[in-house]
Length: 327
Image (cartoon, rainbow, N blue to C red; front, side, top):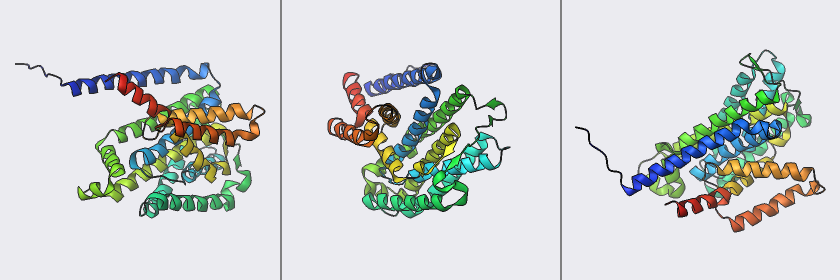
């Protein structure tokens, strides 16, 4: 005989929240599909690449509580490896170049992680910054990077040997698909039992240790996963702009991704996406205005205002309002 399960108020709220979240995902997917017909595809691709980079950084900071000042190293590693391979081996397809660049970022992340997770707080941040600066000077001196000139003219090639990525529209949908894959990996990790342990470590690491969790292993995995996704963003960005340069390896880039994440909302899935879109849009608009030389000070002022007014970031504050009105 079939029985009807009675939903508790908490279960009903969770069900409604899940429905709203799924509808929101579908709406964003629809917006992403029509976006290149409403805005310049290359600009949108830049936003998506930096959004993936910021989402990768947020996985480490927002859910594991680890502040890295050296994430630019992984962005640049993915970009340089992909750019070098596609430039040197014309027969190599872009997806293979991107996968190889991502794998190189994962390997570098494993090395950095083993060295960095032995420290906490500001010491962890300083170790990651020092290692990233080491990689910056490697990229300057290494012959395959082009030094200060960078790698230019990286061919986009044909996706799977079938789709010509020289078309900006085709390239946009490829980048959009890469972003969705990266975002799905982060979303799954955050909502899995592994993600719940990460949050427990962030909130109270000694308690997590006392419960028997191998804290270092969890943090190392988060670091490597974050590095790999950052490398994926860098590899994709190199294919889009057909360029890999020292800008991606500079410590300023590590600062920018922190700014994007904090503006959007640390510890929220969509915060980095909003923060990246805001920062890239402001940079684009200000660069074309008489205030072009004041881009950094203006971004800094906006950051200060947002931190003072919206402690949880734009998305974090919006979620507080939604939870308050839709209990």
